[in-house]
Length: 276
Image (cartoon, helix red, strand yellow):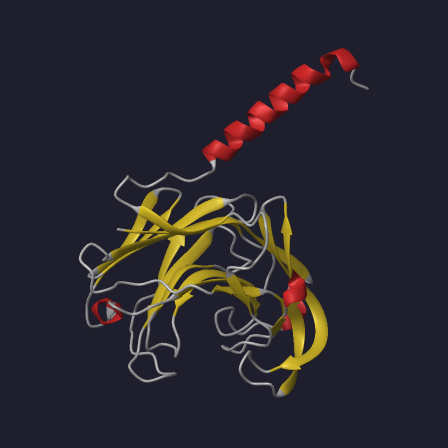
C-alpha cells in the first residue's frame, strides 16, 4: 500500500506522463496554411455522425447496429461480436435476412470536397486508430459519396485482422451507379508494427491531381491522376468520412466463418479534416 505522504508526487508523475503520451500521439499538426474544418475527439456524443443500421455489401456477414458503438474516455469503440441475428439487408433495403455477426459503422453528416473557389483545392483527412484483432475482421477508414461510385471512394486504410502488420489503400470511381471503372489501384503496405497492439495515425491528402497516403507522418504512396484511377474526375465531388469494421466478404477471401474470431474491437481516438 502506498503511504499517503507520497500520493501527491505520484499523481504529478502520472499526470505528467499521461500528458506527454497525449502530446506524443496527438499527430503532427499541419502547417498554418491548413484550416481545420471538422474534428471529433469522441469525448461527447456521435451527433456529427449518421449511424448505420442494416447489413452491407461485398458478401459481408455482419449487421451494423447502434448498440455496437460506445464512447469511453475519449475513444470510440466499435465492438464486433459473433451473433446470429435477423436484420435489414442494407441501410436502404429493409428486406430481412440472417447475419452471423453484429458490428458498427458511422458516416459523417458533413460532406467534404473541392469547390470552384480559389484556394479550396486540397483536403487532408487524419485519424488515430487501433485496429481490431482476429481472423475475418475488416476494419476501414475511408471516404465516399452517393450514389457509389459516382462521387468516388478513397480507402485510406483497410486491413485484415489476421495480418496485423499490413494495411492497404484503394480508389474507386465510376460514372454509372454500382459500376467501378478503376483498375490496379490497390496498394499494400508493410507497417513493421503490430497495428492491433496500439494506436497509429493514418492520413490522406486529396489534391486535384494526386492522392497521398501517409502513416505515422511518413508518406507511403502517391497516386498520380491517370486513366486507371480517375482522380481528376473526382474533383468537385463530395465525400463523407466513414469508420467501420466489417466481417468476412470478398476482401477476406474464401475462408469459412467458423475460423473467424468471436469478438473484436476497433478503436478511434480522434479524426480531423483540414483544407487549404
